[in-house]
Image (spheres, rainbow, N blue to C red):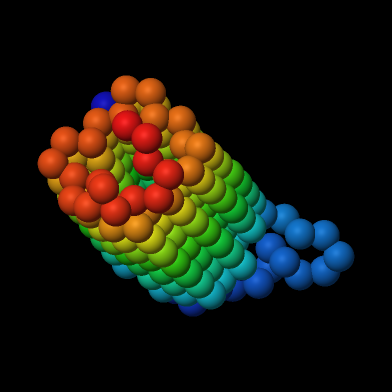
Length: 191
């Protein structure tokens, strides 16, 4: 029976790591795979291409952070705030984003397949061409969310608010839209 040691990093420790990774002529993305970072404040941080796979970022403040190309597969982001964050091309496959604040974030070309975004604020969020296949987006607020050309195959929107959400050219094969609100006031939905 082996006991797994966990190291907890303070916000100050993380900012030092971020600064060191971007010092000099060559950028070295952070690798915080599996790290326990509950409630950490990384608002506005440049975390381009960083790896947070299987990390615990529950309750973290990532508002305005640059997570373009970041790898967050199977990460726990429950209750985290990513308001206004840049997640262009990020990988969040099977991530837990329940109760998260994702408003005004940019998930263009992001991979969120199998993720859980239930009970989240996804207001004014850009999900253009994002892969949301087999994703749970139950009881979430997607007011004015842009899902243009998104892959929503098998996604479950049960009970979500969709006022003025853009579904133009989205792939909707086997998408569940039970008890959604304002489906008739979406843009481009052809169900």
